[in-house]
Length: 447
Ligand code: UDX
Image (tube, rainbow, N blue to C red; front, side, top):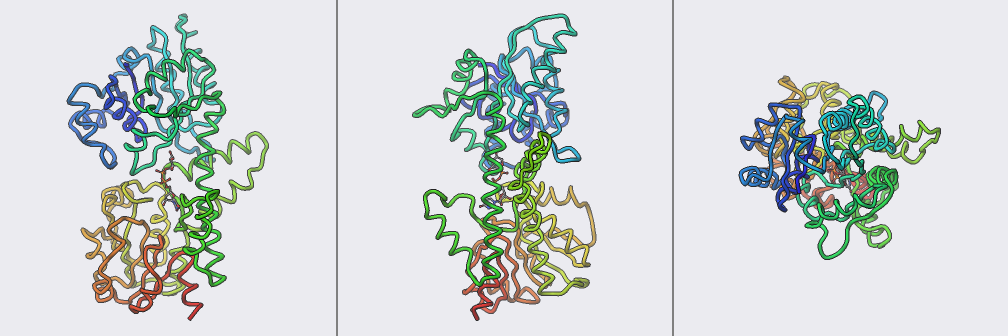
């Protein structure tokens, strides 16, 4: 099938590459000329495992094209994906200007029936706005072409985006037109083998499904962080509690890992956006508000531990920081808890020597050159002359470091672990002071 994807961001590029991989003829359109030219040379704007070879292979084999020519894009596919960003407005609600701009572009150039699929995470009611925006342009043009607007939210996870897209757990389709379902069944056929993953519903329910999913997951995390904070005060170990409750199949083991707060491009933005949507209809979303508050506080956890150990004034202190991305296997630092940590340490006069396996360029882009930030080539180099180690992201190769080297290199044998990577008792025996989430202090209390 011929498919057009507007917006070569995370969602758009992965979706396009995966559709091309199964044989569809995909044209990607973006307004960013540099991005388009780079993609043609095989330069992929994001780090995502498996994405570069997939994009290059399908580009070379002619199933994946990149262009800035919107008109060519509109005439290419019956199916037109909208996969542009919906950044938060000043008040936290999703800004739809890019979505409606694409809608108008499609209406501007269309000369036949189009199925417009909303992949971006958009507030309930957006499909109607897209429809209105398109109809207004068609009216201006004085033409009449049939079109459908469908909500088809994306559930991919950064770091596992290609795999998630190749083997989706569900394909949510929100539409009011049964005929469109047949077109989409054909589109998604290759991903829908063995059992039917398509969940059909009305448009508004599909739009809300995406927010509900992300807000539920964010709620699980904030809940666990709250229990972790309680565990710390009560002398309990959250890791034991986590196993205890995860074994209940109604609760499950997924997304109950306490930590230094959730980040990324989705959870913070989507929780905020659903709060704004609720407020706009006069509903006070107390649970969602609490989820957000708990998370914002949790991001302060690591700097609070540091201050508790080293005091308010951190002038003259240097900290090794392992992990800057909001989670492993990505270079994305949007809303990462590392940023709250770094900025708090700097505000108290400390210096930082940071290492991240993928996010070094991103850190450089965000913070530029500054005297109090050194981006180091290895995790070991980050330790040299550092007073203590702070861990923000659970990259695999942080899990089994050389503890003797750590102890000999750090000025003080102190580890602040925002991801609970190590066994507190073993570290205490080795002579480390170990602060973790919901357990570090409990171990100290027991002594
Ligand atoms: C999320 C959703 O999982 C995905 O379905 C949606 O399409 C986009 O948003 P993503 O933002 O890529 O995906 O990351 P995810 O793996 O969900 O992690 C989000 C954040 O939560 C990370 O900062 C992670 O460290 C944190 N987290 C996750 C925890 O603190 N504890 C957990 O148990 C799980």
